[in-house]
Amino acid sequence: MKILQRLVPFIMGILLIFLPMSLLAMEKKADTLDELLEMFDESSCMECHEEAHGEWSKSWHAKAVVSSLGGMHNFIEIGLAKEWETPLTKAQIMKCLDCHAPIVNYASEELAVKIGRMIVTAHKEKGKPAGDTIQKELARLNVGCLSCHNIKATEVARGFNGPAERGMIYGPNGEDAGDAHETLEVADITRSSFCMQCHGIYKAADGETIQCNTLSGSYQNTYLALGGSKSCQDCHMKKGHLFPGGHDLDTVKEGLGFEVQINPYKHLPGQIKGVKSPKNWVPSAVVNVFIENKTGHRVPDG
Amino acid sequence: MVLDVTARNLAEKDPEKQVLFSVQEKYFEIGRDTENRMRYGAWQIKEIVDLTLQPMQTRREQYLINFDTDVEEVEIEANLSYFISGKKGDVVYSVKEKLTYELE
Image (cartoon, rainbow over the protein chains, first blue to last red):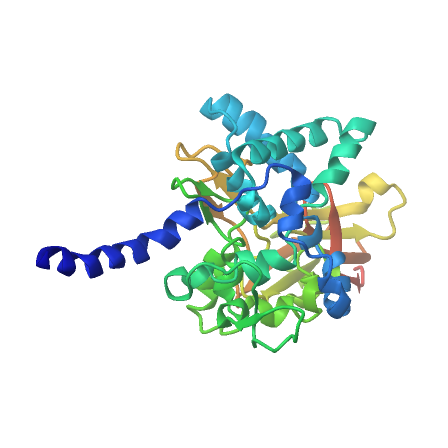
């Protein structure tokens, strides 16, 4: 009996550790796109955050799936099907969608595969009624409010932060939002490491590396190493949630310096072969072009 | 990203003969797989050859151009273009300067 009494706290401890994990594993996954979007309903965000929503709706985050159909189609049809001879599964399509549409993490295996198939059809049937209808459906998937302010919010320091709580809104200052939603401050969202979850070499759960872009590498290994201290957000949130980058000519211009110095002179006679009058001075110029990369990463980035 | 530097003889009417000097520099990443083959697929690329402009650095390109002895007026143009994809490019900066030479 005494042994049993001693074992009770131990058993309770084990249960307390493993119960939340098993509950998490059992968490309901959406079987349809409507159900998935309802689980992460963002329709009310714009009621209070009209300006941020307006900026975001014009951003590339808002079209993170439909603007990348070609690349994702190629991954499924060439990468998986032909090169790897591997079936399309949720784990495989998440190599794209964990960044392009993080809410798909909460889709069932069947739904995630269906979304992968929709991506293939939308790309193949682009411009045709069937393709356009599917593209409209896919446009509902993107890097939305909850992608950053919930799903990815705690991932940079998952051990310290723990997993994101469903329904919680994570922000840079944890401002009280009244009855609208609960808010928690998470400094991570203001740091480059937050953006680097996706804007750099992506490491999938199975260890595969995916190089859509390599921004974080040059940021960390060159910019910071040379003494740079600005964050991604310092430059790319100057226009709020629009996040302008390489697609915006003004932002590209801001990140580059360009100076051309042209020095005309006459070259010594007899030294330049093939001129019409070898005894004459040769009209010449030295052109120096200086291109300054003022950004915090390589330009251009792959 | 592409730098184009062109020198044109303004006295020459034939567009083909007008260009006296032309050079193009390309700044980009070459994605390569584990067998060092150039690749475009994000899943195929495991390393890069880095021909890009590095942060906080200024790249200097220098050209010494000799024209013919009867060239009197030259226009030198330097354009810096940014390509967001292989298909779509925009001129970010453009500089033009006219040079005149006294003929002997």
